[in-house]
Length: 425
Image (tube, rainbow, N blue to C red; front, side, top):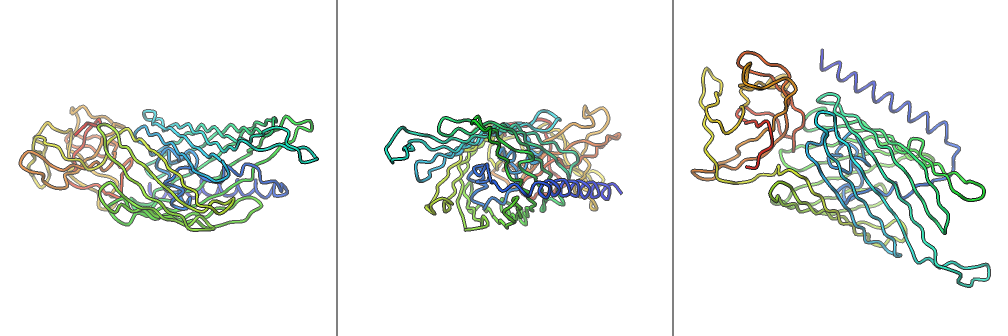
């Protein structure tokens, strides 16, 4: 019954989103201007190399742009910066930082800028008069929250600026998004971008430009227990119709992977490299594709810092000790807080751990989940971080937990061990 109610919640949210966004588009379809084109170019090399099909993936700080609901799934602070190499002396840059706020979701801030300088100004006779510049910027404040284990919502509020030939304009806008996890392998997403976005110029006639609405729906499928993902988006831009985008990312070797996609007009691609360094992960993403202005090749490079090391690591540590009692695992070592001793067959997102009343645990407490994947010698083991769980019920000898977030399509497994806080293994 609970699962049915959650699915109904999703359906109602999606219906409200579609009706609301559709009514906006129909009510304002007479607006022929297509202002704010720089906001429809996309951000971050990772998402761009996947064709911009990122609505249902959105699992890094760029979620503030692609789908702010994805911020609700973040567990650690992350930062992204992108530098673009474009023709015609154009500069397109992006920066974003996001972090969780205890149990109150996650917040993010972002900056997008497109600019070009050194434009020759000429009078009606063709004589050079002065040098002009053109610069467009958007400043985002984003928030995402996980309502239930399956459903997340989010919004982005943005402040807009445009400077051209001595004139200036400012304005505001908003985005709204949903994410729904059907299973550890499949996730759905939907967004409405540029709700009531417009800018007002300080020209004599006080010109106002309204940004077209964009409606997106997408899915992300992770068929394997690794970093392989396939994404598919469908986007409708007001007055411009709809188009399909698709992408994939795959880790070929340890710490190195490739990405490819279709952005609705042409194929794109790229790759990535990451390295765990102490308490954070450093990642470099690269994308290449044809520029929409002059069809030259555009190169974009992003640098990402994730302030938590959740990649497979190897380090000598005390062996994990446990034994079976009545078919269940009992904790004997003080190295970790608990072990998963039973997983629900009907609902694999729920399990039991061997902590009960008097253990110090409490409802709502979150634990990091780790897994031994192989032996690394007598005094060592290879350990991987696979996700985060939350206590939902406590009994005398055991507690029930549910998945909050899991990486790389993992499922809960008997024997996984838990820590209340992230530790450096």
